[in-house]
Image 1 (tube, rainbow, N blue to C red):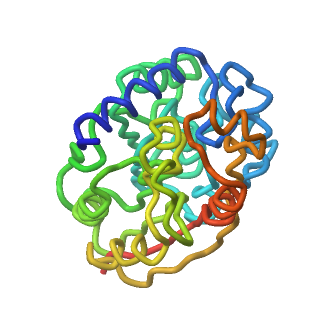
Image 2 (cartoon, rainbow, N blue to C red):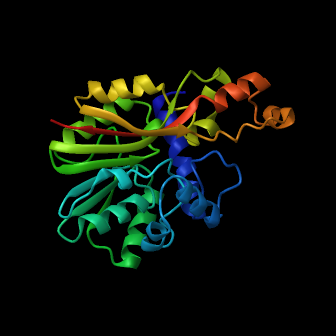
Length: 274
């Protein structure tokens, strides 16, 4: 599928999530509208009960695959940029850490998500956050203007990941830090998965090999690149039941299904701009 069409599919998918009020990037097929599931997902990927209590209601949609805030070591007064900010979950957590002297900027290409995030900020009177409509491949920010960049399960959705990291490098100040949680692969996926739109929107088929991902970060100019953590990502939208597989149009053998389930990983990556 062409890049333009992929972006439209992702926009449409996440617009529906924003309107429904809760869903998940994780491969759960029936999570939309279930805030308890969004909470459970967030607790399982590294957020605390206090984190979830401190954010505006409606900002946690269960879309993450890790907690980049926990490892970003944010400091008072810093300017933080969130790539693919959704309804503002990580932005609001970052805002409490950088304080009134700091600022958090969320970028998202889905207008419905931007509207939801702005409304969440307004209702909770959080004034050190702003949300901008834009693509993470073409950031609406000047060079060398932010101290820290975070992102949570979003870059895998971008067709041009190299451009995303080049843009991240461009807007970071010298000495600026990058901390992302994302989905990568340990081996290539079957073509049926790669061509499956649902799997793309659910953060699976747009993912690339781990070594290629890290190489893209390096090519963008980043140094001190580290994989802080990695864990297998539960690809349970592919059922062992053959009828369900056929229904989803995947037509995978049991061996292929097991192979996919063992191929998809969530990683946390840190890096620095010299």
